Image (spheres, rainbow, N blue to C red):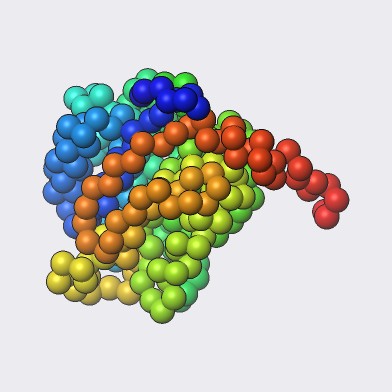
Length: 276
């Protein structure tokens, strides 16, 4: 973390990876991405939803508990490089399904977020194999308030408002966005809109598009379109990637949150009781 004229600046790296079916191979790739992020001075690394294993395969056999080997490997990576790492994995659920979980670990933090809004849309039914989460999650690292959401969550503005009200200044959104007509445009619009709704920075980390590297996923499941973004509290795009795998590193000026909320106080001006 460094200071600027507006307060704290946090250097955040977005690892736009292309997950394979093997958790071990994906953990090794996450480690390589973390090394590059640390070399560029990042203190936070955000990897996509399904970083553990891509969609389109049976998820039950790859799911592991948070004290299992995959999560332990991510924790080791975070500790080795001094990073707060956020990465999507699958954990067992009590009803025999799995949970779509973000592991959030490093820099004094170790917690989880289970995806609340499941992707039952565009002909896909995530809820058949995935159980939903039921809580809003924030965490503080180095004095910065982080909130967490996953992919389809970005279509639900009330979650982002709740995160802001719960202390989030930066909302991290790992995703594996489904491809299709208009889907890139929706992704970009939604990420920018949620930044405006919450007057938070939004860091959206997507799976890369398999087609961008000549890979045929062989599934209709959402395997990613790329186009990760970092968006300011006033909806300005401060950094973006294309469709292919890559690393995006952006200095996020956390003080811009207070300035945005002073200029456009949508959180303070909310009147939810007026339209219940």
